[in-house]
Structures are given as C-alpha cells and as structure tokens.
Image (cartoon, rainbow, N blue to C red; front, side, top):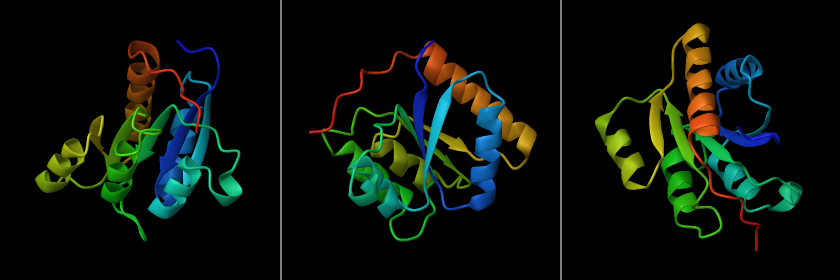
Length: 148
C-alpha cells in the first residue's frame, strides 16, 4: 500500500453526494487528500493547472460523475483520455445513471470502471472501501508523470 497520501479528484456537482463521499473516505484506512471540482470545466482547469489551480497536485485517481452542468462527465472523460499528460490517471465513473448507452459510452472513452452511486450511506461506505482496497492495495498505479 502507498505510504504517501493519495490524491483523489472528485468531480461531482451534488453537494449531498460530496459530503457522503468525504465521510465515507474518512472512515476508510486510506490516507487520502480529496480535491473537488463541481463541474467539468472546473475539473479540466484543475487537471491542467489553470488559474487558481496552478499548484494543484496530479491526482492518483479521479472519481467522475456524468451528470453535471457546463461540461458533462462524458466530455471530461474524453478530454482526459485524449490528453497525453492525463490519460494515465485512472477514472472511475460514479453516477446514478444505469443507462446502457452511458455505460457503453464511458467504456468506449476508456473509463477504468463504471459504478452506480449507492442510494444510502452504508452502501456508499462499502463502495468507497472497495475503491480503496482495489485501487490502492491491489492495483499498481503508474508513477506520476509531471506536468509539462
């Protein structure tokens, strides 16, 4: 398991879901620094270190909702996976959509996994614990490549 804190970028506009995710990660064993972008434009600005995000850390993992204003999750995923500086960052789609079109489109754009958002806190905690165990104990992540 990684000894330094892991950096996770959560891209979601739902305040309640953000609170639940923060609480759920707080209850896991992972030493995580959670950064939040509330829409797709802000997420891309964070990832490309624009403006107020000039000193933003490169995330080890991105948790991305699909349904957001300004730039939706599909658009963000496409930009991430088509940017040589970002494409190695694993992207988890965590959304309420169960539509086959959304699932297929996300995997076609190279999402690393697609998870339906749980409806209650206990289930949300289980999902966060599973994400923690899989992505930070089982999987070997690529080394961070510095921004150009």
